[in-house]
Length: 296
Ligand code: RIB
Image 1 (cartoon, rainbow, N blue to C red):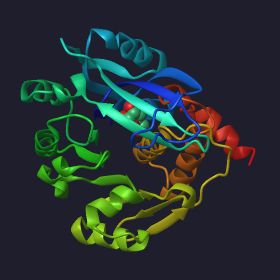
Image 2: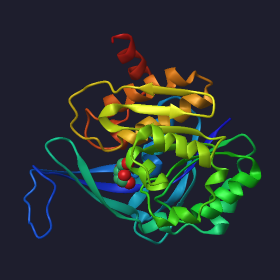
Image 3: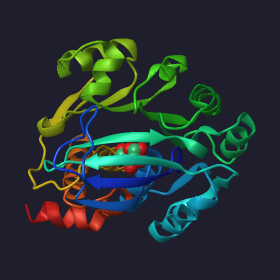
Image 4: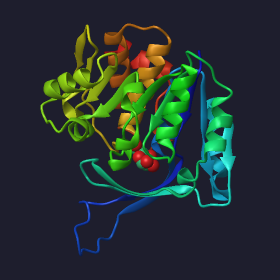
């Protein structure tokens, strides 16, 4: 079984600030770094670092060559990444003194996917393979319909949540991975248990993972519910914490681990990621996560 992510690649411009800039304010930043990011590639990297066989697909511009190098370095297959005559997606990220962030996203090449491109990529995958999606590329409704027709198992991280998702047939999703804010946006509710109840009412055969920030994460399917507290650490940058959790969770599912063990491993991996700056580079390898769990 192999995993495919059709997802974003962003050049993250990360600014350290003492607080998130306010409307009308000009704020001097104390540091600035450029990292590889994008929810799609972050999650592919997390899958690969967790030990899964993963293919990443999406589009970059001439300025995105470093994503191909990173795929090689971290063991992500990049055969279905296409270079086009557009700017690679980028973000402007502010990280404050409490490691909280806010993100401005420019889609660029991530928003240039075509039906032909999607058809070609999916032709290399088959029934039972996993498809992982986020909401940072265009064509999501088409991708979901075509992958479902093929019998692929589709996991969706509906992030960032916006009205484009309403065009997707979410009944075709097998695994939802979302945070409590996105859970609230999908269901109109705020209590985590009620969000889970509502999602299961809407999608009774799905597996649902709801991350709750400092309150950890909860998992639900029609038979089981589990919760997982966070591992407390001194965070320096929370960017890609959710992406790390998502990649580790799916890798755990693919390898047949029990859900409580997957949740524990994913929470540990995220807790390590937030102690490091950046996105792709902050995600730990499986061995490091296992060692950290053993030392607990
Ligand atoms: O989830 C974190 C990611 O969101 C960042 O790497 C940034 O590129 C945005 O897409």
